Amino acid sequence: MKAIVVEQPGGPEVLQLADIPVPTPSEGELLVRVKAGAINRTDILARKGAVAYKKATSRLGVEMAGFVDSVGPGVTGWQAGDRVMGLVTGGYAEYAVIPANRAMRIPDNLGFVEAAAIPEVFLTAYQTLYWIGRLQEGESVLIHAGASGVGTAAIQLAKRVSKATVIVTAGSEEKLAFCKELGADHGINYKKAPFEEEVARITDGRGVNLILDFIGASYWKQNIQSACVDGRLVLIGILGGSEIAGVDLFDLMAKRLQVTGTLLTPRSDEYKAALSQELAARILPLFAAGEIRPIVDKAYPLENIREAHERMEANQNIGKIVFYVGEQE
Image (cartoon, rainbow, N blue to C red; front, top):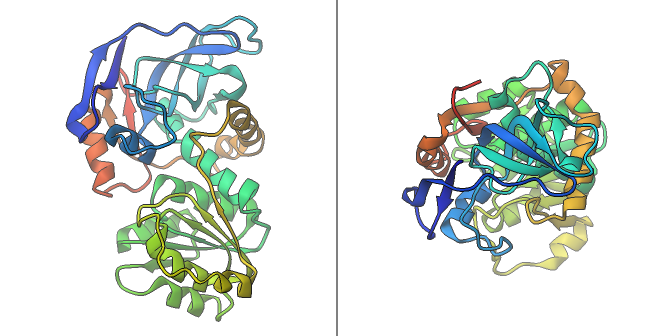
């Protein structure tokens, strides 16, 4: 089969299309004929050799959508031809295996490119908002990088599921306008105004209940200022650095803040399965009803995966960057 491999860390130029054997599904697994997949920040980091928790591998790609090609021993409820999506290892390829207990059925109203834009970002957004952030109906949430894949998913979930007041940050008016189309109540252009001051204005000085942060160190103080008393801060990324100088822990104590860090990719198979099953039961019906939707920024053929990586690294995307295998469907 055709697959993208990385023989040594580096820039997009190290992504190579190669012929490798088709995997064989083991006990409890499905073999999927991949029709589409998506690009994630973790792929960029892995390509650069900068992911400490990830085992050395020449394969990238953590999600896909396609047809079940065959089922492994012990699998029930799935058969060849079923449309499936979910989290995998080595998804930049024509075939991939997935544990059946974390495979999700694609809603009938979605194509493969749209489906490929769901698993990683909606699972991350759901986990962050509800399993970790414990967002309650009617609370307020500040979502940084609102136009990113996870950001666009989190906006929709927070608004449709929790009727939350949603505040987002982004770096352009175009991105903010799109976030508002998805349901965001307030948009802050961080290039034009300090977001902590805008949050204080919007909330009449109270701050927000929950903050989802992809930036890390460079936003630390502003996030603490933006949180309300008994607020929660969930760290999802460290695009702005991982080390914070001069941290005053009393700032946390004074507001009784809870700070949690999380990563989805290195979680156990059991955790991913439970999360996938809950998302499938609770959220996939909203896709089927058209109440929420995957946001596809741009789709590339698998052989043009380098361009997809370049677009993500340039922060040009609104929503998910997707690749497709064969003809786009």
